[in-house]
Length: 222
Image (tube, rainbow, N blue to C red; front, side, top):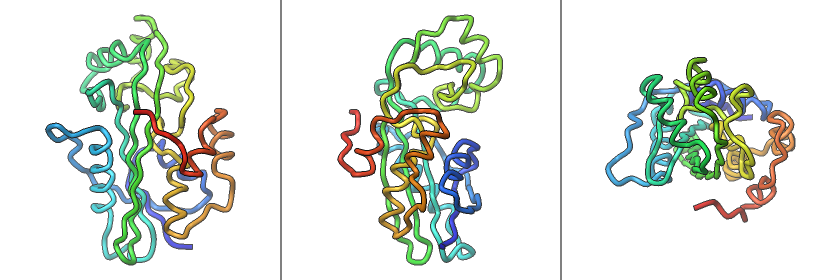
């Protein structure tokens, strides 16, 4: 078993990667997350995931795999990052409510023995329910919105921001596990368990797309 590093401090990514049942270490370095002029969402998350995995590489981790991810909430042509403050979080939630947006996650896995990098992108359509002003204010006041891209956590039971999801739930949390599995297969590393079943049990979500994703015949939302 090769060593595994996660190039992220995200508690959600740590929680999801742990579902594979492997021991791993965290080695995350900061990157500049500002989009480049004219950069598409797919190019943006791919670039940042690649930067993260390269920054995490060092002579100390010379025999293993480094996994990096970057997730963006995209409304039309606008990439929504983490809100600057409480007022910005309220603005984002008002903008997204009652509408469908896209969540992109770029993945990069680096094999430290030879520097090979495998990459993938997952896209999920996210239908946001029409929350009331009072619900938005209460959620933002809880503090949960302030460190989330798009100012929401899909898994927040109290706010329950999303209804009718029909894509990858784990992607919206920040680490699409079936896409990770696809990449790891290419490195020669295969999970010992049915990761799709483990993911669905953990998230309490009946995923309609996992089979197509794992078989690489899933058509991504555009």
